Amino acid sequence: MSTGLLAILSLLPIAVVGVFLVGLRWPASKAMPLSFVTAVVLALFVWKVPGAQVGAATINGVITAGTLMYIIFGAILLLNTLQESGAIQAIRRGFTGITPDRRIQVIIVAWLFGSFIEGASGFGTPAAVAVPLMVGLGFPAMAAVVAGMMIQSTPVSFGAVGTPMLVGVSTGLKTPELQAYALSLGFTDWNTFIGVAVATKVAFLHFATGALIPLIVVSFMTRYFGKNRSFSEGLQIWKFALFSAFSMTIPYLITARFLGPEFPSIFGGLTGLAIVVTAAKNGFLMPKGVAWDFEPKENWDPSWTGTIHIKDISAKTKMSGLMAWMPYVLVGLFLVLSRLSFLPFSGWLKSWTVSWPKIFGTGITASFQPLFLPGTIFIAVSLITFFMHKMDGTAYARAWKGSAMTMLGAGSALIFTVPMVQVFMNTQGGAAGFGKMPIVLAEAAAGLAGSAWPFFAPLIGGLGAFVAGSNTVSNMMFSLFQFGVGERIGVDPTWIVALQAIGGAAGNIICVHNVVAAAAVVGLLGKEGYVIRKTLLPFVYYALLPGAIGYSILYTSQRGFFNAGTIIAALIWGTVIYIIATNKGRLAKLPSSK
Figure 1 (spheres, helix red, strand yellow):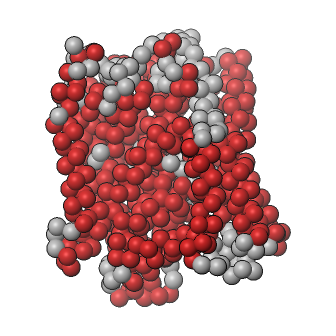
Figure 2 (cartoon, one colour; figure 1 turned 90 degrees about the vertical axis):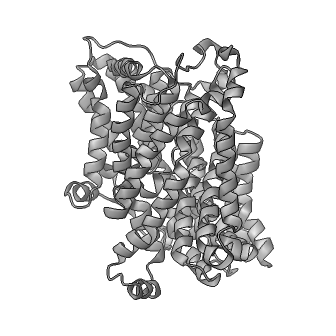
Figure 3 (cartoon, one colour; figure 1 turned 120 degrees about the horizontal axis):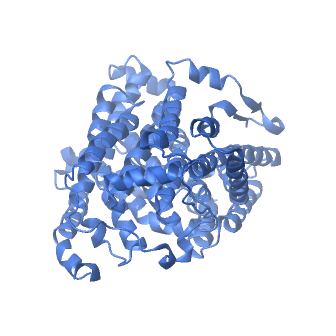
């Protein structure tokens, strides 16, 4: 079978997702079973993978889906607990004290708080924490999900205390040949090689690309969820948005350079929060005039609202802002403490492992660590909140019941989404002798791209994350392949691996099961295709600009500074500058500006 035909067949499970979920707007609960069946049929009858291996991959996927549902349940339970205790009302009141402007609020909650949570935990946890918090503040559920997905880009490469680098890239590259390569460059320690030769490049590319993410988030929010449906109202706060971006990415870049891959997103998010909240309170670079807000709820499009409705419940006694925020403080604290390897907590929590080794006699093993999952931390903090906020038992029972019902709704989509991923990634070793589907796709793309590969490397990383739902898995799957392509085209292969990691982070913006999880926590199941359509353009930006910068860096010495990469990067930034510079005229034409 020709390489081209094999690549097209490999693409079919993803194409089914694109056509039915994104194109025809089917809910994930209907589109993902079709994608799963497509992957199974290809695995059995084209790749000729043994039925036991397909079954084992499916079982592994079901178990993984169960862990995701557990995380979703914990996130919803925490939201419902805070709602019933009156904390959400107090948090809303506190944000109004900083600013009632929703554009500023989304930057603080999604971009900065979300980056910190990503750095501490990863694995989609920012959406499980930040998205329901935004809904609690009065955001439409759909606007909260779209914003929560867009920020899962810049902080992701250093999420979960550096896991995509220290596990994903490190495991993917660690061969005797590459260990010798690292030694030849003077790196006697493998992790130092990953941190210096790869992670610092990744941080630089994120620094350059992430600068526009807060501005993109607010502009898309005003365009799709504002009264005037205008990008201009988001662009109006470009100074504050860029200030907020650099408040996070500058300490992020410095941390990556001097402290390593574990802490950039944690320190960047925390430092950015301190700087930006202080600036907002003091009116620094804040927009003049009336604060931007959504229309009254009765005017919202019905598709924006989930099945989870935030009730305006007051605390029995007046609750301080610190007491209201304390559950989120505890979540962040517990996530960080439980994931730092030099502390004993990580080992204690990982000591209980539920495992099914070599399922059906294959090499596939399913395992999870219940105490280490973020869902356990959410539930623990919910229980602490019950006592800390002196809640009524009846109210707390309502929180548990409502959370269980919402969590079960997510199962119908995840129960096919994750098994499809596992079958897709475990198609090696079949009687047909073909490589696993993702590698077949990547090799076909590399054959077509040639020396233009730096433009395509992030797209391959994004493909891996889109399918697998994990930057870490994408990096494990493709890092060695990307390194090899870099060697073949005669450029520094560590830059190609860095572009892979950037793409793997960007793929989280559109990843199906992350979207399902984010939608589930606010009761928006069935609207996954709508979310992906809204986040597709930010994903393209986050894959294209780093690719252009990478191409420019790699080929300037050979082709001069004004090469294709430099030109494309300049066009992107030039377009942004032009749009910002001409925004006043468009703003003046809006009804609210007259």
